[in-house]
Structure formats: structure tokens, C-alpha cells
Figure 1 (cartoon, one colour):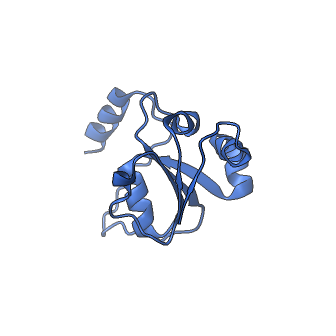
Figure 2 (cartoon, rainbow, N blue to C red):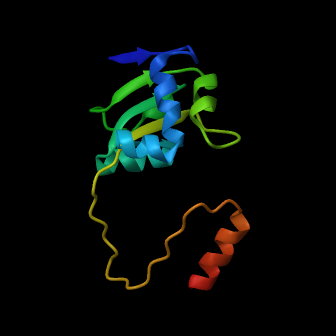
Length: 127
């Protein structure tokens, strides 16, 4: 069953918007991801708990064990950190996940990259 929320003033949406702040992410052990690709990957890894979507076509390939909430674009914009967000957002639970590094001994960890040019420079330097 798909739940529907259309109000920006819905208490649940207000609680989710608090997840933009680190202290609430740590307190609730949840975080927000944006875009179809990240939602699909989180679904494959089993950390996805809920999907907020505008258009049902975005749900293709997502694990059906998660909760689905149909929302409007205004709610997506409220929860998103991007200027032009895609029409799907995932709510994931924090948990320890084994990471496979495929026998590579070099790892580049990035946090808070705001400029795509900086990211490209770091990747080229790492190579």
C-alpha cells in the first residue's frame, strides 16, 4: 500500500526535514539520499527503509519491502539539498555495512565536496 502526503506542514515531513542536520541524523539513526541511482543502490544494500516519490515510474527496480509515500514536488524540494532535485528521495537507516575494496589498497574518501572541479582534480591526482 502506498501512503500519500501532500502537505508541507505534515509532522512526518517536518521530522524528516530535520535529518538535514547531523545531530538529528545521529539521534534517529537515519539519513536522506536523493535521486534514483542512490535510492536503487540503497535498496540493493538493504539500508533503504522508505521512498518518497512524485512519479511511480521512478519505483522500477526498487525493493518492494520498503514503505512508499507519494508526495508532491514541494515536499521533495523541502527535503532536498540540491537546486534541481530528482523526483525521488530515500530514507535510509544507519547500520554497519561490510565494504569490499576488491583487493585495492588505495582508497579516496571525499566529504563535503561542493565544487565539481575540485572532485575532478582529486580523482586525477589519485590516479
